[in-house]
Structure formats: structure tokens, C-alpha cells
Length: 255
View 1: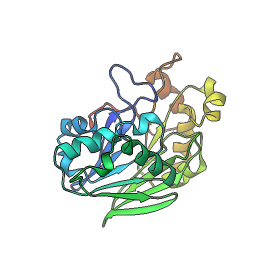
View 2: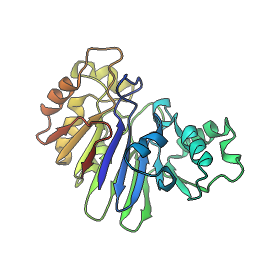
View 3: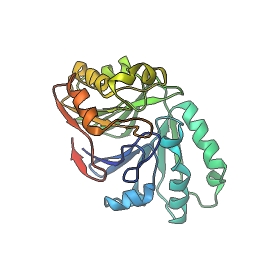
View 4: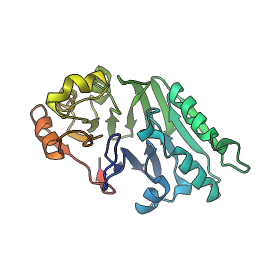
């Protein structure tokens, strides 16, 4: 299984980096998690034919995680996609995603490719034999899903946007990698947690308790504070003894 990040930023993108979104690749399967930036061009950039994308997972309805969904569907329609596309999310986010698409009358387009919407509050969906996606609720200001992607030999867990959450740790036990948001520093934890976010130190604590080998930090918010990736790594290291990664966009990481 490989993971490729298309962006690592929180609500405000930087000049060099888009909002958090990543692609999972496994034995010909492609799963896009959250939809920001220019998804069709991002897929092309890493050698994936957008017409063959298998699945999209949307963790929640906040703008930075969902805004490019209409663009993705519109582009695929213009490119004359025929292959069905599965979209997995929770009930509230599915409703918002459909509202967003219907603003542009996308879901009623003539000759639109088939779309399968899968709504999960907590449970799993089998993408194909040997590949499962599990969603579980986390603690954020709107209905938000963390997720676990499991194959026959490895698994990863993504916290999405959340304050420290027991379920993230429970699902991460036995996983090789935890991808966890890191929206701010230790000194901001009270404010972060009240708004449904976590610090790098708290991400490290969860990774350490879960026993994962690798912690990937993302969802950085550099818009209103002095906060750097170096600081995030240092604070996460105070609680986690494993490998810590700040992912480079469009670089493939083997899991």
C-alpha cells in the first residue's frame, strides 16, 4: 500500500501547499481521501488516470475538505467517465455534499457516470476482497469521521479534524501508520481542543498509546500564529518514540 499527499494544510492553504488530501494506492485500487485543490490534475501528476479512480472518502463537510468535489465530478463528466465512482462518508456529510453538487446541477447531468453513495456512521465498507474502509466518529464541531484503510497485510488510520479522541487510538492499535492532524502548539491546546482540533504533542500521545510505528502530521495552521513544522515535530517527539513524518506533497510513501 502506498500513500501520496496532495496537500497538508489546514483551513488556509499556503502558496506551496494545498489543503489536506491524500491518495491511497493498493494493487490497482485508488482511494482519494478528502477533496481539495485540483483533484484531477493531482491524480494525473502522480500517474493515475482520473477516469479509473475507484473511490472517494469525505471525512466531513467543512470547506477545506469538500470544496473540490463539484470540480472533480464536473471534470470526470466532461472527460466522459463511464466507470462507477463510490463516495463514502457519514450521513450529514453526504447530505451536504449532494447539496453542494446540486448547486451546479451536477447530479442530474445527462450521461453522468454512475455514482454509489455509501453512508457510514461507524462501520466498514469492503472496496473489494482484501481492501476495507472503516469510518468512526471523532470529536469536531460538525459530524466528522476518522477512517481506517485495511489491506491483507497493513493498515493506516486517519484522525481527520478532531480534538484528542479515544476512538482514534482504538482504531489505530495494530495499524502501521497514524495520520493525525496537528493544528497548533502545546500552548494553544485549550483553544484547539474546544474547536475540535489537536496539538502535535497530543497527536504524539495518541500514536504512542496505540503503538504505531509511524506518525504522519498534517492539517497545519500557519495563518494566525508562529508555528512551524519543526516545532510540530519537536512537540510530537516529546510524546512519541517512533518515526515522525511531515509528508512532502506528491511523494509516494510505502506502508
